[in-house]
Image (cartoon, rainbow, N blue to C red; front, side, top):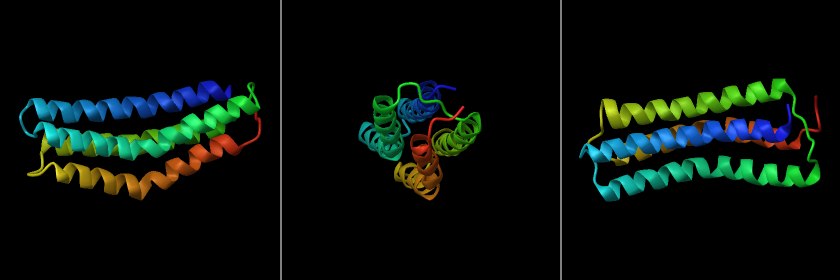
Length: 140
């Protein structure tokens, strides 16, 4: 598969996950369970969580595109990457759903703290596989 298409697929997974979590936080706000300033802090925490991964995707794809426009990536690497990316995002989406919709915490800080703990404990997998995406040679 062409590298640019693979990166687009991974980026869509990340973007979908962020949008779902923002939507859940916004629904919690509309239900009156959190205030506007609390919603703002939750949204900022989502941006913090995803900033490293999205920056790796942007910068890596930019420099790879400059280096080799026809770069191909192994389907094995793509499937491993997609599996880890989907698993990581599913954990964050599930925890966000539980904390905002099933049993909202007494404090919005619970959502932020829990999300950041999960993200920091597991982001090394995603960061590593995304970095590997960009340092591999052209593969079929």
